[in-house]
Each structure stands twice: as C-alpha cells, then as structure tokens.
Amino acid sequence: MPRGELKVFSGTTHPELAAEVCSYLKRPLGKASAFKFSNDNIFVAVNENVRDADVFILQTSCPPVNDGLMELLIFIDACRRASAGRITAVIPYFPYARSDKKDQPRVPITARLVSELLSVAGADRVITIDLHAPQIQGFFSIPLDHLTARHNVAKYFKKKGTENKVVLAPDAGSANFVEKLANLLDLPYAIVDKRRIGNEERATARGIIGAVAGKDIIYFDDEISTAGSLQEVVRLLKEEGAGKVYASCTHPVLSGPAIDRIKKTPLEELVVTNSIPIPQKKRLANLTVLSLGSLLAETIKRVHNGESISALFG
Ligand code: R5P
Image 1 (tube, rainbow, N blue to C red):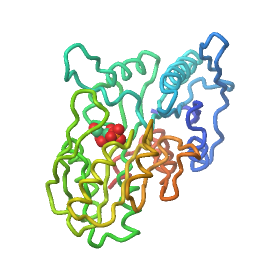
Image 2: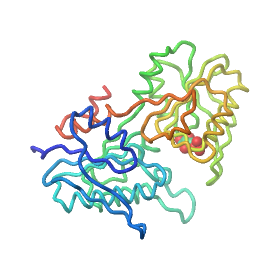
Image 3: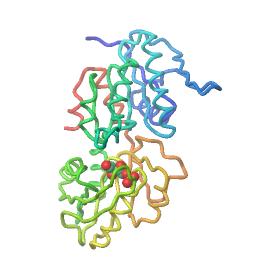
Image 4: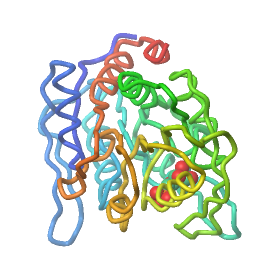
C-alpha cells in the first residue's frame, strides 16, 4: 500500500539522535513543540500538516522517565487527531522494561502496561533496540521491530582486534544475548553466576562458567544502570586472573552511583551506544559512544518503503 510522506519528529529526550537520523535520511526534522504548563501538564503541538503522513516520533527513555513517556503518548495522540496515516513510536531505550514478569506476589508488569498505553494513544507500530528481555515483544498487539546494537558493538571490537579475548555474559539471563555477539566476533564466551535477591539493586557475582584466566574480556550487557553488576563482575574477573576488561552495553543508563563505581573499576574502556543521551559530566575519559543514528534511519527508511529489516542484520 503506498504510504503518505515520511515525517520524522523528535520528543524532547534525544534531539541529537533525531538530528542524526534526519541527516542520514536527508529530511528536515518535523516541526513540533512540547512544553509543560505551570500546572505540570505536558502539552505537544504538531506545527505542520501530518494528514495521511507516515509519521515517526523518536523518544527514548531517560530521566525524567515519566515525563518522557507521557510526552510521547501525548505526541502520538496529537498526530492521531491530526489524521496521520500511520504513527510509529521510535523508542531506542524502552521504559519500564525491567518489570516484565510477575515474579513476586502483587507486583505489576509495567512493560506490558507501557505497550498497551502506546496502542491506546494511537501508535500503529514501535521500533526499539535491545529490549531487556526479547519476550517483551509478545506484549504488543501492534507490529514491533526489535533492533539490536550488537552489530555496531561487534564491528567496533573487530576493528580493535579479537586476539586472546573472551566475551562475557554478566548473568545467565544475558547468555543468549551475549552468545550472539561472541558468534559475530568468532570468540568463546563465559557466563557469570550473578544473583540478585528480590528488588535489591546490588547483585553478587559468585563464580564464572568458562575460562577467563589470562584472557582479555569483552563484557556485554543490555544496559549498565547503577554499574553494581559491572563493578562486582570486574572484581571477580580480576580475582580469577583475567587481563584487560572492556565493558560494553547498548543502553548507558548510568544512574545513581554508576559513575563513581565505574571510576573505581579497573576498566580499559567503556563502550556504549547513544540510545540514551549522556551528559557531559558522565563522559569519562575511557568512554566510547557508538552512534545508532544510521541504524535507526535505515530502519525507518525500510519500514516506510515496506522493505525487510532483518536483511539489515544479514
Ligand atoms: C540485568 O538483568 C541486566 O541485564 C543488567 O545486568 C542490569 O540491569 C544492570 O544493572 P546495574 O548496572 O544496576 O547492576
């Protein structure tokens, strides 16, 4: 079915990434304004015609998370009421994804709740990157394109050289995710026996399954939040005789004590993507930021043209 004109809009959370996407697509950023009234209510105005257009709204999850989410829902509503032809929410880092199952009595499944909120607001489709758990895709009743930053990370480490390196999954839950990076790099991988009790943010690393002594390590995770896992895993790696440690993740949440912890952790380098904006004060000397701009832009172009997304990762 022929689509209306492709239009990319940006919420207020990550205008730099939206600008990169537009520059790759050689299209101007859609005109819109978002602000808060003095009563704390968020308002969004779409300042150009979107009737029948194929609209993409880029909004990531970063503090203040709830404002960003609400703004996205309102943005979608505004486009729907302006008769957009199709609305795609482009959410590089998906909010509330860590609550994805009822693993304690009387707790919510907020990832599911957010997926329903997006549909109710009027989103027809979602594009996101490295969900905390791939099964979250099943919470959506609208099409979802689940991208990965793994290829960007693999390309970076390939360039650096893979000799004497082992890829490390910081816990059993991430083993499958990390195995795919190890396959791209043609490297062995190891898994940390990491346990987190209840809702405690701090986890304990108890042992490592796989050989790490004398090896340089590529640690890979979907996100680094408080960096408690990273600090704990690197402590154990050093005890077990590992060499240099390169840490990497898709989503640099870097919340609370993260920066202090990373400063105290013997890391050769921290490699992340720009799925979330990183303020200057968090940009440590050993930080490398890989851009997801071209991946998102190429995906948007393919969704618009009805082309395969998986071919992007072939
Ligand atoms: C855990 O399930 C995730 O994959 C990450 O390992 C976790 O979110 C990292 O959190 P933090 O940096 O706070 O230890």
